[in-house]
Image (cartoon, rainbow, N blue to C red; front, side, top):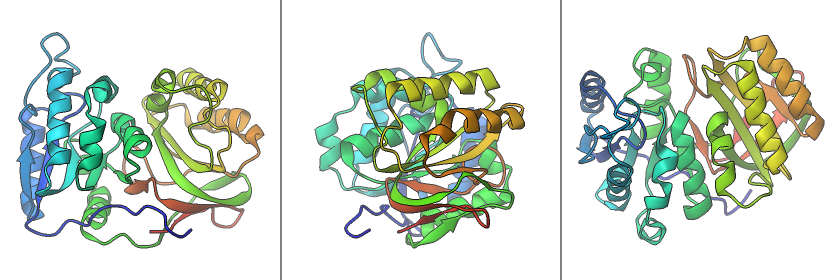
Length: 308
């Protein structure tokens, strides 16, 4: 797949990296841990002015006002002295700042790595649609998923500091629910966020020609059912070439989630893989979005091959 977009980066020791909180608030303890990690990695953090803010009404789930969080993200992305924008945590709130972002200014800035997952899916999708810049779906600095798992730390460090190169995403126990092979651009992320942004798009496919990654956390089966049905009814998957399902950490029970995925997604007739290592929880990889890839759903070794 020639001429495709590549992930910005890598960062180098001594680089300045922006640290922002576009979604929920982060505790001072978690923030200190994040800054200590960046120091250990020999990176200079540039903290968003409102990272320590809490929303005047919704301080339990939002880090500062929508305008303030958007301003921090705008400042971070348009600061060409930084080589990456690192989101501290997810939770909720990224979709609330999208209408406060100045797209022409974002497009004019030098591309850099945008790193996050979970609620940050709202930003990944926005960056893909409005800027055409690949981003990194990865555990975040202010989360237990990253700080408590050495493997997740290693994967994030590799993705930040190593020039992007072809690699394969696979896992023991992964299954091909629908066999097949296809090439397309990686998209998707957190299922509930993709469903949440359905109303902000024109009806029809948002995944045509793409391989969709889906995962979620702490959702009961009926909730996952609703999110999938919302996407299906909106036409989200029309023209998609493949679907890969990641971790469903504390969702389910997991057998119910797998059976649901087979019931609703297998009829699309495109390659469908269960059990790849991306999303929430331990043992997940950092995966670029907006880059070309191949999904290989076979009985031997279901996988995604990334062309970086």
